[in-house]
Length: 599
Image (cartoon, rainbow, N blue to C red; front, side, top):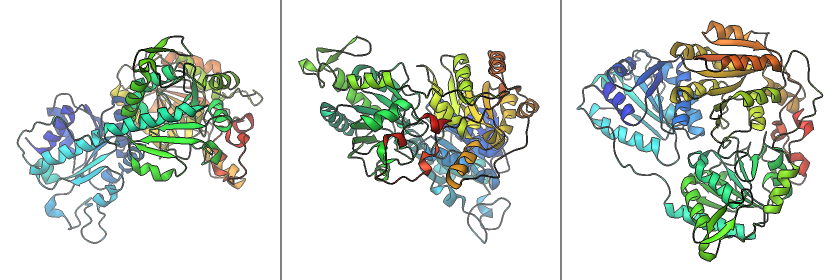
């Protein structure tokens, strides 16, 4: 058995059933060997960059790692953007790249990336800063050790990408058949005791809190059921970052929506006017979550932060206490304290009962934050009720697009938002049902990433409806891989917000510089382009036509593109982060979403 086949068997043994990539001289054998391994499907993408983003989406959908491959030279460098995205968003993907034969190192071989000799790029140095593990397989006998280390990095601690570079002669070399399920691996995570310490500190802080907020980031997705139970039993107002959208939903406890840029009216007002304790779990507290580092977002509040990666702590010096702990283990420890013992505490929302504390519940019989939470729920909506004074003929308002898709989508639909204004509209107006999921790349925010990652989601979730919101600008970045969906009969619906320009860039230019240029396109027919790529498509310019297009997409196989003429008079609130306010000038109005910023 050669190394290439062993790598394929390793993928299958560890739950990875798809290998995305493009073949070339240095990695062809790897893709050929997929034919000899039951349970592994290769998917030929139109670009290696597409392969890394599809592996990214596959990993998000399955909760396991995704895998992609590229040949040496440009096949390797084309993978980079998706790998950076996976690193910044903590998504586990295994990147298998080819390399010229070892005997050719330093000799200027075709597509050599060894760093040896003049004008040679060292691929290992290129990947070093964007991976959890970055290694080159030097000898076939190292395979077991390298794959064990790779699996450990892919499945434990804060997740992220792993890169293995393999010279052609090593890929062809024979090895003994191996057992690729390595059993129990080092956990690579903080001790469970740390989660207990964090939970006790949170309980203690809640005793004196009048208006707490449980803020959940992307790191909480794996423990979604636990956090929903916390919301139900505690009555604590709950909100998420953009990447945390979907962890909780309007059906869960006191739901305050998304915090920060593009977020909900309710969470903005609550943070500005009432909140005195923020419990931040699994979030980096980045620029969008803090509404462009608006000091009012968290100023004057007691902030407790729980995160698995202590390297994040230095980014937010305003946090009062940091706890290095796994989000799922923290949720478990918090729930244990919430439901221990025999006394009964009525929950505000459902009237049901929960068990608390051996006669000594950790909270009073009536939560001190109940009245405040109820008042904000009553007075402030999740989404802005926009005055309809900017509607135009032959174009559809963005909130109407979201409303139509939400009404049409399956109860367990999986939504992906690409970068740009379309994503912010989706984040603000799309209210998820309990079984629905939502994913967005916000840290790297690579245009076109959602088009591709949604393909990976669909491959990993056969039979589940996958819907991707994109702008025309992001579509032109990577829309050619609609043909990949057609080639493999992948079921997916892309909703294109088409305004003939880079809308978010134009908005930002005008906000910062007062003018804009080099942001518009000719009137390209995206529906026709999609049809040429093998997709069903329709071009719509009214809500009625949109409804008909969505209805025709239900129950059909393969890709569908709905090209919607967008009314761009409505602008999402994203540019408060560019205004650089002084610490002393902040007012509640400057951090809250309001009609003037969204029109």
